[in-house]
Length: 116
Length: 109
Image (cartoon, rainbow over all chains, first blue to last red; front, side, top):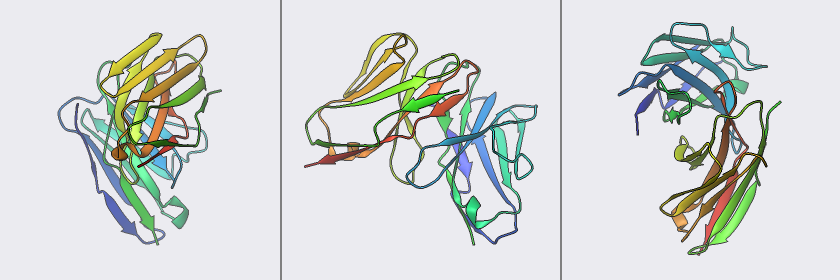
């Protein structure tokens, strides 16, 4: 399968600071990328969908000014958690899909964010 | 709205067969996925069904009935390493993939 690289895998930050998470498709062009968050023992909750070159579509209840998503190229999307608070501590995972919409999306390794 | 239901937990014995069910209600349908996820790791793809019927892939098989909004994942010859969460995910009419809460499978010796 295709490879999606997510960086960093773990990050600890102080409350009030911002953290940027990168998601790269290494061997295919990702026309669509998805960002999920997952709390312990819960499933993945879709936060937003981003298409290259356009604004991200956020799910209901997700603050777009707090979770900034940029999908500037066909191989890179970034999620920036701004003014992070302890309740933002979670596992964030990206997935990327290529040209055909009805195919699997490939997942990054995930980023464990801890806000102290 | 969209809703995906699957059992919270299941326990099975090594070498046995286990079936994990998933029912769904979505706005439009463009396929159903099953993923495996070990604790602290990203999900890994197991199967994709878009037409009715059974898809077999080694020890894992997945079934879909679109008219019933129902799928199951069948795991044969269970191994200890199969202990994980199994996520049912549905791609809606807008090609957005929504995940169920996952089924935690415990395989015992």
